[in-house]
Each structure stands twice: as structure tokens, then as C-alpha cells.
Length: 456
Image (cartoon, rainbow, N blue to C red; front, side):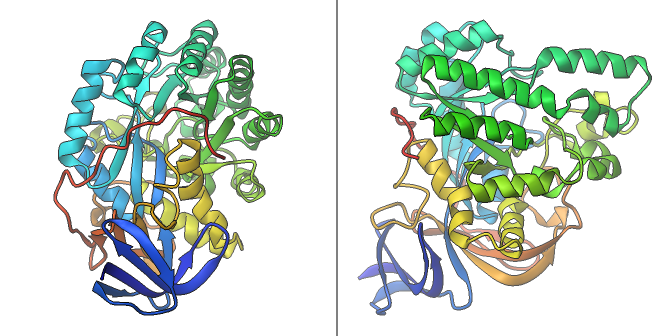
């Protein structure tokens, strides 16, 4: 007997969508059939879509050390409420996740709190390249580097990035890079501050698109030289995606994600919302989102990631009078893929392509497929039930965020996650006004990073 049958749903597979029954046993997908066979639990999915659980390759849950904004429980609860069943958490915490003690501390905290399965990044810093081989024993999902200044992680200069890429290639791992030109940003920021500019548009002007795609070009060049697997994070520019696409077409293991906020918000929204819409790279001019959607559909952009990066309301409010005084980051993991699916359907993006973008491709790129990222017999039974007809409005108070704010407040959403499973167990069930987490903190499991080049 099976443990679970999800019957009569539209199952979104890797190449097609079929109306059938989906069976789970021992936490794994066991069968897809039009026949109804006995199971201990039955869920009727008639009229709804069954998607593979989303894999978010870029989250900041601030745990340990900065948990006023978010922690692994509130962050992962928000994730599963949005259909995200696996998360890869960035190293920008306190202490910075850059060595064995800090990694094990974060792993311990996440193991106690997370309701989603999780992988962990290690920071690549100017001075830890020589330790990469030893650090691989910790099984990180990959390494993260910043080409521009961040208050939470030391930036790496080109030579240091080259050394890190060589070490990571030798260790058969992968590197994710935040690509912005620090010198351009510093120069333009100084110029704008001297002119007395403190408005959101000034921030956008201080980090122009060319500051991003120029850095993408440098990172791609260094990755091509070293042969390392490179993942360019949260690309806001179609030009950056084009650079990656050319390198990929030439046979290099280089990929790029965009973030959902770049698909729905722009610089005019930033001007309207203010500091609560400040992020790095910044929101771009109107029309840019349509170009990113085109790049998603064409395959130039490999996948999407939320870059969920919460700060406290008080921290964000610091930017009311001057945009230079607030930290960069957005709350939106709970709504990100629900918005993506609804808008994708309106834009006639195939359901299979949407699933590739938020589930299958991240799993492939980080070498955890087919265990994660697809509805595949034998894979972990991570999935979510989506009602494409339900319309609702984003209300921050009805989220699981520790800090009840989001730049998407008041936005209308087409389609809603009704239930989420991790390894065959219901972890979230929808209901008024915000639904419920149905497992205890610590249900989530560590996802060990695997060596080897992505199976794109």
C-alpha cells in the first residue's frame, strides 16, 4: 500500500503535463498512474496543478547572529508556504560562514529550526582560498563571493577571485558570484552624495546596469580561464544574461539566475515604495522586466531565485530621509513563485518551463537532481498543490516572515499554493487567514553539497 495518493491533479513533469494520480511511498515518488490504487492518505487535486517542490538557490535567513530580521524557522516556514521545499542559504551571517566552526554552528541552528530541506554556502574571502579543499569535507552546496563591497562579507578583488576559482575548480565544487563593479559604484555614489542626492533614483543611478554586466563579463572571463563552474546570482540585466548564454554555448559550465523582484518591480516602484524596495543590484527602469521575461523563455536565464534578504522594519526605516542609510534586501520568499506562476501563465510560458525555472534547473545546476527538483520516480516527494484560479492580495501580516513587511504588499496574485509536501509529508496547508505549518521545527534535513559539474 502507498502512503499517499494525490489524485486527479495536473502533474507538471519535465516535458509534459498529465492528468493522473501521483503516489508516494517512504518519502519518495513511487508511481504515476490513471489507475486508483490503495493509499493511507488521499488528497483530491481536481482542478489544481501539482508542481515539483521549488529549489531556491539563494536565500538569506540571517541565522545565526542576525535573527532579529529572520531566522531559519520563520524563513523556511515562509518558503514552504510559497511552495519552496529546498533552500540554499548564503553565508552572510554572524559569524560569517567561512570556516569549519562557523559552518557547523549554522548547520546546527538550521537543523533545529528548518522545516524545509537546506544546503549551506561557504564564503570565499580574500584569504581562505588555500583552505577550500579541506572545507569541502563539510559538504557545502558551493562557495559565494562578492565582487563589490558588502558590510557583511569581504569583497574579493580580481586576483583573489582568480585564486579562489582555481581552488574551487580543483575541489570539483562551484562558485556563486555577486557581480557589480565596486569602483564604478564608489565613484558614482560619491558624486551623487556630493550633489545632495538622497532619493531612491540616486541609488539606482549609483549602480547602473553597466556596473553589473561589466562585472559579469569579468567573472565569466575568469571562470573560462580556470574552468570552474560559475553561477551568476540575481542578474537584473538582460545584457548579463546574454554574456552568460554566450559562454554556456561555447561549452563552459556557467549559469545565471534572476530574482523574481526584477520581474515585477521597477525603478518607479522603488521611488514610490522607498527603502523597503531597496536591493542590490537595484530595481531597473520600466521595460527591463519584459526583457528578462523574454530571456527566461528563451533559455538565456537558467533559473530564478528569491534572494530573500530580510532586515528589521527599524533598519529599513533608516532610509526614509536618505537612501544611503538603509540596508539592501527584500522580504518576498513566500510570494515569489506564486507571482511567477500566475504571471507566467498570463504570458503563455509553458508550465513545464516554469517548473524548470524554479525547481529542475536549480537542482541540476547544484547537482542534487533527480533527488530534488522534479516529479521523478524514486526522487524525494517534494511538491506543492497550486490553485491557478484563486486570486488574492498580499497582506504582510498574513505571512510567516518574522518582520511583517514586503515591497509586494497590496499586490494582486493569480493562483495560490494550497499544500506543500517535503519528502511526502505535508509541511504547509493553506487556510484563512495565512495557513499553518504542520511539522515541528527541525523537520528539514541538510542537503550535502555534491562534487561534480552540473547536469544541465
